[in-house]
Length: 271
Image 1 (cartoon, helix red, strand yellow):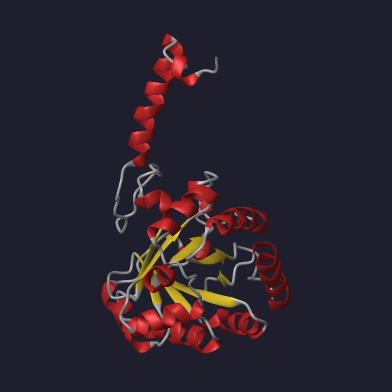
Image 2 (spheres, rainbow, N blue to C red; image 1 turned 90 degrees about the vertical axis):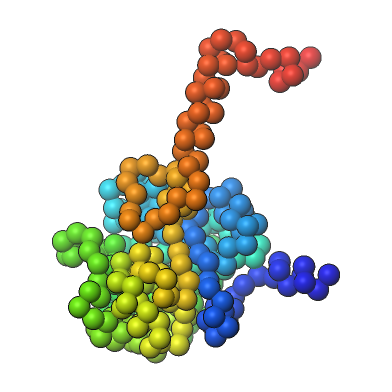
């Protein structure tokens, strides 16, 4: 009985520090709606990120840049209604925290108040440390994000791998975010060797995406993992199912049944 109670207990920020200390890998996925969040929460996922990746996999944008705070709030509310165990983090979208700290704090407070998440994610290294410190000081948990920062795609000149020439500057970024109070840091698009070095040099958990297996945990986009998003497949993504193909086959069967009059039949009609 006690084992079952522990398995359904909600996770919190302290849970991830203990997992790092115990060398217990942290499992993370994105989710953007009630149904998908409920499925992966029931499966036992540790952390759910309502990511600005919703811009591409939900709204069909070319990047994460057009995503608004209202969109993140809407989807986070849906996810929060489904989740019982996993820790939920919401992305701060582009333009909501880059201009000045006061505006960033106001946006983060609104996101937390309207969705009841305990933490937000922001991209940035040393330059983001003052904001991280401020948010933590007023009671908002922060997940950091260094390496490939999708919100900086226009100034990076495209997607590229970081840390090929060493991890020194990345370690400096990670330490600055850690010292500011972040409870974990996403490492995106970083060479495996550098990600391992970063993980060894900081005390908070690292969550990798396209960063090798030396991190304390891994995160992927829901629609990538289950083969729902077919526009492109990043090198670091592993398909654990091809749900798009299953849905396509089922949709064709439904279309054929409706056109032929086979559906609805007597078993699916009221007398």
